[in-house]
Amino acid sequence: MTQQILLLPGDGIGPEVVAQARRVLEKVKAQHTLDFSFDEALIGGAAINDEGAAYPDSTQMRAREADAILLGAVGGPQWDSLPAPERPERGLLAIRSDLDLFCNLRPAMLFPELAQASSLRPDLVAGLDILIVRELTGGIYFGEPRGIYTREDGVREGVNTDRYDEDEIRRIGRLAFEAAMKRNGRLCSVDKANVLEVTMLWREILESLRPEYPAVELSHLYVDNAAMQLVRAPKQFDVMVTGNLFGDVLSDIAAMLTGSIGMLPSASLNAESRGLYEPVHGSAPDIAGQNLANPLATILSAAMMCRYSLQLNLVADCIERAVASVITQGLRTPDIAADSGSAEGITIVGTTEMGDAVISALDSQ
Ligand code: NAD
Image (cartoon, rainbow, N blue to C red; front, side):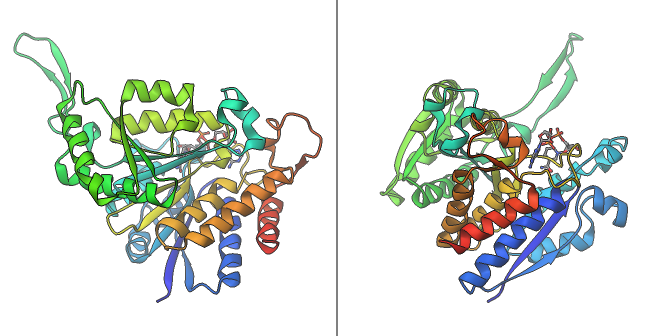
């Protein structure tokens, strides 16, 4: 059956980077005679301008029908004066909650040639390849009661509640084990089970899943130690799984280890593995429309889409190898050129030329 891919280019550099990812997908479709088709819809500021809402009904209808969604980025200065509930970024929150995308996958990969970009020593990070699996729709960001209250003694008090039920933990745990099976078979669960009951349950449920995945080696770390280990010896990790709050912090630490925001893809999945795939970066209005944007994070997001929603592991491998090969050839968009150490063998290219290079690398595999 034909798989439907919905493209949501969005704002700023979004349309430029999504266009290159689409060309790459068209290329692998022809190479591997794949059966998928593309649809395109508005989100963010572009949707506000044309349809009066950041996640309009027409986009919602097509998003619900799609097998996978590839998004560019949303937002820009022209919408900054709108009240918060009407801004382009609300479109992202709306689509995530509409599709119940509870599982956020954030890889932190560092191609050896780009190791200079990291704030850590190159030998600690060259070849880094971690996947952080973060629960996205539960935990302390959503738990009730919450609020700022005035107590009877007149003193104000802020309250948030960290809560997970066992079903929520089990479903994110299963996705993390499955992701580990698609990678190197090591899963580290991060909690604070020495102090917080909610994470004692988290650890117990993760342990209860262990027998279902004998090929995966499960370990546990307290979050304080996990943060230390990430900046001490990050290459020890394969897949890390954690709740919403700890995942928010740890995935940004891991992203910083790579130093190159234009290279980082992400995925948010629901229980049926339908997903929203997007680069970690924003709409970069400062470089929009100038053929300067790095399209590789979006192309790598398309590779994740092949792996996690379209069940095309080998195609995902091909795209990732093609990206690695253009980096090895010395091709750089300006954002990653400055970090390449010596200029020898480095060629600075634009957005479209980077797309061309990935496509010809696919040809020569
Ligand atoms: P940003 O990620 O857009 O840009 C930060 C810096 O990184 C800029 O200098 C930009 O030029 C550079 N950069 C980002 N992506 C790049 C790429 N692919 N190639 C080359 N350089 C790149 O973050 P910001 O400036 O804080 O936000 C700009 C707008 O994007 C805001 O409206 C913000 O709300 C929005 N935003 C959207 C998302 C999203 O759609 N998921 C995420 C973050 C920010």
